[in-house]
Amino acid sequence: MAHLGEFDHQGTHRLIPTAYATESVLESLSLPANIISDLTELDAATNERKVAERGGNAAISPGELLYGVPEAHIVNAAFTHPGPHGGRFNDARRGAWYAGVDLETSIDEVAFHKRRFLKESRISERISFDYADFLADFSVQFHMLDDAEREQCLQPDPVPQCYGPSQALANSLLYSGSSGVVYPSVRRSGGTCIACFRPALVFHPRRAKLYSIAVAAEDDKVESSELIR
Image 1 (cartoon, helix red, strand yellow):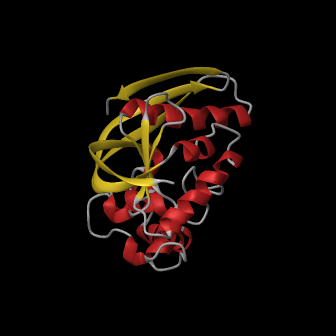
Image 2: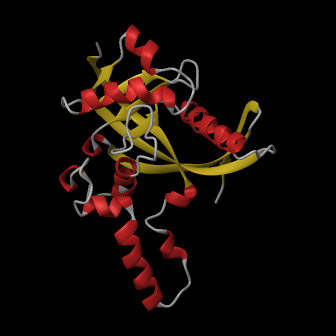
C-alpha cells in the first residue's frame, strides 16, 4: 500500500503552453473597452477556473484555491481544468499539479502527449510547441507507490484507459487526506514526477525560461531549445 515519505525539493518543473501562461488572452486584444468588458464577462461565466473560484465546482471548494499571491491563477488552473479524461493521478472532476523533478523529465512527459496529438491528427511533419517553465518548491509528505501499485498505475498505454487504476488510487488517497503522489516518470527512464493534490502546497510558483519543444508523430526524438524573448 502507498506509504508516506518526505519530499523536499526546490524548483520542480511544470511546463505550460505559452498561450495559457497569461492571466487572459483578452489582455492582448486591441478592442474597444466596452467590447473587452463584454468578453471578460463571458469569459468569467464559462472559464472553469473562474467558475470554481466562485464556488461552482463541487470537486474543489474556493477555500482550497489560491488568491492574492503571484501566479495564483496558474496554480488554480491546474486544479480546475482537469481535461475530459483527467490525468494519471486525477479524474475529470478535479485536476492536480503535475511536475518533474528535473526539466528533462517534464520535456519528455509533454513531448509524449504532443506526439500522440500529432498521430491522432494525422500530421506527419515535425512541429514545434512553445512552453513556459513554472518552478515550484515542495517540502511535504507525499505518498510513495509500492511495487504492486507501480505495476498497476504506471502502465504506458493505452491512454487514457491505462489511467483507470491510478485514478482510483488517487481518489482514495485524495479523500483520505493525502497531499499527493511521488512516482517514477512513465515517459523518461530514471525521471521522477509528482502529482500534488492540494493547491496550498504549491509553494513559491514562479516563471523560469521559455522553451520550444519539437516532435514528430512517428519519431521518438525530442528537440528542445530555450526561447529568447
